[in-house]
Image (cartoon, rainbow, N blue to C red):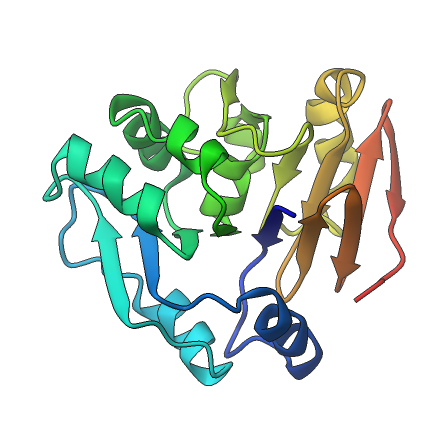
Length: 218
């Protein structure tokens, strides 16, 4: 059963109740492959995201960071062998370009690993997302970008939704007629396990131009 975690951003560490679920889901801990969101900045090593897992007691025999220092074929092989694939937070546009250039989406989709994404990484795990300056992205014009497409919805992660509801609705209304959009801020998660979608923290869904808060199930 495939398991996907769409995370917001955690201020310090992953809360205890979410940690428990992660520990139950991540049983194979041979290797983790972390996909950079700034693949040309080699000082970025995913230290924050790794610290979340360390504090949660989830450690691996091998740690691999995938960026431009890794050859394309090697990157794909690391994903094929990974126990966990983690798309790191940071710059969603650069990460999206990197995923496409290195042809990483198909290996991620085909993998039996637990796939996780934080903020930018969660956005790029989704089917499509709106790259809009009004939503905080570094873009002059708005455009729809394709993500990995692990699940048939969109994600707006790590965004101050509560104070920008009208703006978010006006920007995302057209896309919400095509697919559901899960929108969240900090300290939250959407878990997809098989056909089940679980919610942790303050997460909203925008569907057919209507926004509503979801009940927690984790």
